[in-house]
Length: 208
Image (cartoon, rainbow, N blue to C red; front, side, top):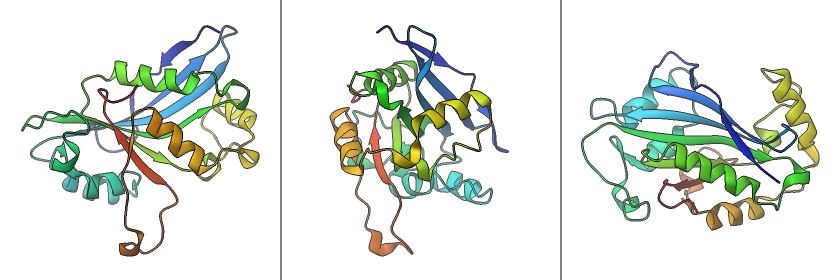
């Protein structure tokens, strides 16, 4: 099966030009979308680091970045204890970071290297970013297949049959760790309620 990658044009969907949203599709020989990622690209700098960026996002009720920004970054860089893991270069320059909000493969195309292909294409396309974070959770908690922005997305997510998806959190965790992501543990006791997702982080250098 020959796979092709399609990066849609990044868009500004908030009030901030340093927060871009992008959709990435994988197509098969029949030009069918068989895998999809929805990502955010965020730029941090010495004047508006992780804490300041989170405050601005939280005012817009854009809280997907809450946990990674609050716990795993220092100003515009990843935290010091993550530098070696991600082979990151720490300096005072502006840094781009990616959050993969959703990544999925249609059930009939799993176990064929499609998800790994997608992650590697993202890492190659954005090989200058410092980190790639991922929030792992059941897709039916993130996506409503009946309420999508485009008919194309609606068709894709309905084909996934999200409510009956048999993938477990354990399987997802094993896959992401095998692909080069590190699971970043969070102490739920310090939170008002347990998080519905796990946080993983990698860099273009560690994804394999």
